[in-house]
Image (cartoon, rainbow, N blue to C red; front, side, top):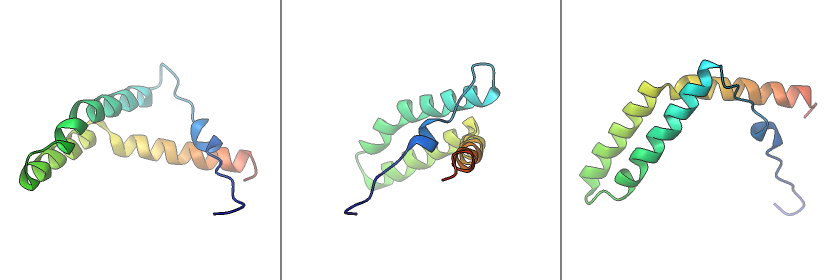
Amino acid sequence: MAGTIYDNSAMSQITFLPDDPISIIKQQVEDTIQSTWTKTVLSNTPEAFEKNYKDMVKQLEKAGVADLEAFMTKQYKENLANWNK
């Protein structure tokens, strides 16, 4: 990676407007991660981890993580196109 520069500006410039429904989805996804990540990582057994992980994924899917990913991917690609990258 010598001589390379990491530029995250196209991702960091994705805008979430307060009145856009995707902003609510983003918040719900973030809240779900915050409330389930520690429990999942600190599971006592591999079986408990698998259960907690699957529960976390189900909650993220219910919160709309696929819609959030689609929105962010579209915005990211538009940013790259607009900035000629």
